[in-house]
Image (cartoon, rainbow, N blue to C red; front, side, top):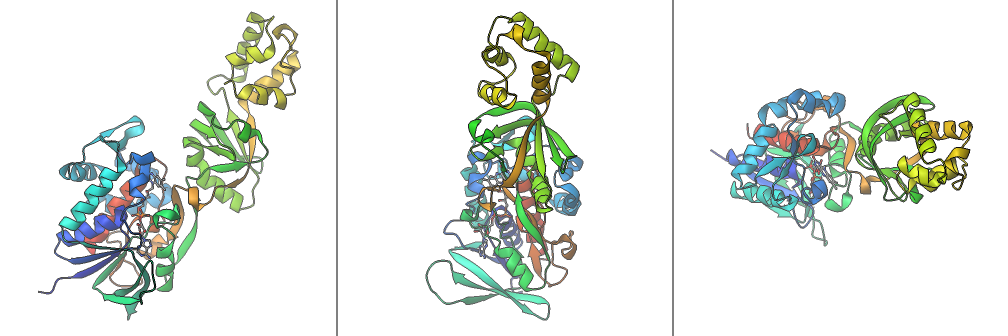
Length: 419
Ligand SMILES: Cc1cc2nc3c(=O)[nH]c(=O)nc-3n(C[C@H](O)[C@H](O)[C@H](O)COP(=O)(O)OP(=O)(O)OC[C@H]3O[C@@H](n4cnc5c(N)ncnc54)[C@H](O)[C@@H]3O)c2cc1C
């Protein structure tokens, strides 16, 4: 019996997993990878440590992708976090988990995960053709019959590779230097697929004025961040954030960024309101300020503020509230005290934009899930065409969810393509 031929486009986590699974089931697999080395993005994930999955139970896991998470049920049914941990252990990559159930390799080295995956796919017989870029899908009567590719560098002419199945695993459009430049969207569109508009997600935000810049490097832990869109509350989140030279970043900012990007796109005015003292209500906070002013009544207010604020925030607070930093505590008026209390609970920054795809951890939008069968990941429009990974309209919060989606959809696409 002739071997099934499968072409995989993209050697990221989704493509390598798909290729290895298809090859393990006897298919002749070629992976086309346009960069000189496979899995460039995987090797830089998790700040080089690779947060590869999460210990969260299935229901919670699925929630992290928003409404589109349901699409992943079948993929997770075939290959979920426990399977990934076991799979990596068999490849010699031991893992451990940290705060929030985040799973990392014990070596703390993302490149180790990439090497293990590449080695495994090759051992199973998958051939990885690096430096080759797929530029077209070849279709006959709504059935895929191959791909056209060129050498990524140089002027070699295009060649065709004929196959029984093709898996598009080209990733999203973020961090384009790693090879994910949105090619999969163009390829899918050329054969009739709808693409949900792509936009950066898990992306830092830019804020008006020079306040953020003056606070650059300051990390605030245990704050509550509220989003206001045209003056109406659009959500809130508790945790850690960071100031940068252009605006804000850090875990809670990245988490809300997709929503903020969409609100800006709708033309809404977006304000981030930071509650610097979320554990104290207004009454308790007032009592706390009064106590500090009383205890340190002869000290300058800029010194007293050290009890309430990180050093970097003090000059900003004094300027925004029009206080005199040299005034002693016992001369602070009740109006000044009120201004301070209100600001501590509602420090506002206006969002004027977001960083580009170059700095976005993931891409929101992508192949419309309505046109893909979740049970096989086969296109509903073109027979024997499959999708895996971030190219799909799937994205999640940080925590290992994006990589698990890539591995799980890669697994299912790989086995489906050999059926
Ligand atoms: C800095 C950073 C840190 C991250 N950290 C984490 C983390 O810790 N945990 C987590 O869960 N997620 C993390 N992510 C997200 C995660 O890396 C991605 O969701 C995941 O890599 C997607 O896998 P993929 O296989 O779908 O696509 P990719 O990893 O993007 O791989 C796609 C591959 O396809 C190739 N390709 C594209 N077009 C073509 C073409 N036409 N022909 C041939 N080859 C092509 C590309 O060169 C690339 O190698 C991080 C992302 C970034 C940018």
